[in-house]
Length: 92
Ligand SMILES: [Zn+2]
Image 1 (spheres, protein in one colour):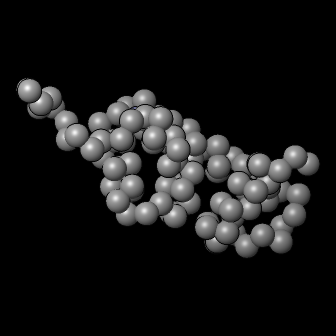
Image 2: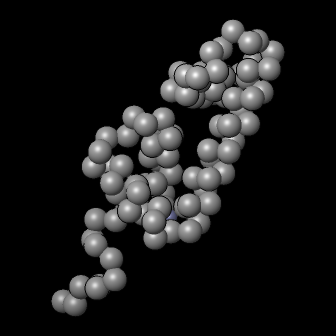
């Protein structure tokens, strides 16, 4: 009968956060989930580190992806993210 006082009941778990991560970084995550995501990130250092590492990986992937073919415009983060994700998902 005693509710836990420390956190709101609707905070997502780390696993749910991982599920949202790709969409969050892409900027395609819907607002309610994004709020939950950011609330979790604020209180969970390990997920902060995970998000940081994920973004770093994408940045590295972008550099590698740009290197062989300079046709990609430099200032198109959304499109490049999609391209990187597609390239990573696809076997060469
Ligand atoms: Zn977490």
